[in-house]
Image (cartoon, rainbow, N blue to C red; front, side):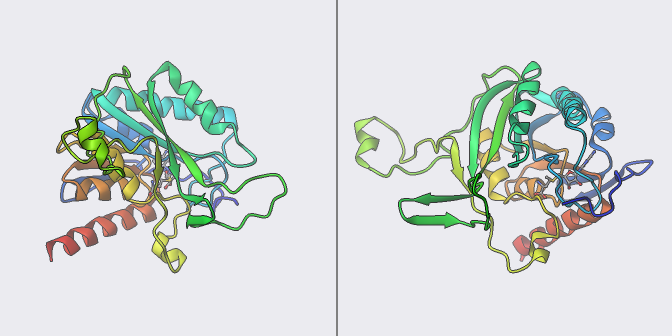
Length: 281
Ligand SMILES: C[S@@+](CC[C@H](N)C(=O)[O-])C[C@H]1O[C@@H](n2cnc3c(N)ncnc32)[C@H](O)[C@@H]1O
């Protein structure tokens, strides 16, 4: 697939800012916008950058030379490190493709000079357990490659020692006798590092906001639960349709989302407004 207009989108000469409740949306190039943000001002970064696998975004081409892409992502990561608080978390969602299986790993290794990889979470989008199947299985005709049922969620921190609220993000014990036997105070255990979060079922492309690479709102919600500190300041430098800010809004956090494409900015604003209205009813 190629970009719909084939050329790099031109960021506006001055970034445009919009506010919906506690969420701020900035239309512009994330590198430029990040430079103007205060150092150490963000608690949690949750983002999914372009994967550089040729997805069909409205304006962003998603096809740089691999070395250029990695250099660019490293520049973005440096800018993110500057704005992240010392006890903050940076959740990076990324996937490769059959043609570029190494890319997410290459990127994670490059980021090693900036961050500690505190956790590596598998975001499981579809899975078969025994003979049963859960989630959506996109048809894939191949003699060589397996169906891609998961993506990476790298959890980076500055020193590898950030405390997490594992139980808020956790699940009840299956075997309740474990609660008393192991001296636990509540019926909750850590969820682990494989998160099954299927896509919401949609009837047509419109309900996916005509965007090829969104994640479900439950993914950033889970990251915020894990962060655990109330009223966190959240950042998504590649905001797309505003899913991270939607999670922030629902969880009482304030957020900043940066997106280069004006149409996605409009969609994000609409989603946030509609969500507020629904919850105010
Ligand atoms: C994988 S998508 C993010 C999707 C988002 N997680 C969601 O759920 O909607 C990556 C986004 O980055 C945007 N983008 C590409 N280059 C950018 C840049 N330099 N600054 C800000 N946004 C950029 C693309 O337009 C695209 O919407």
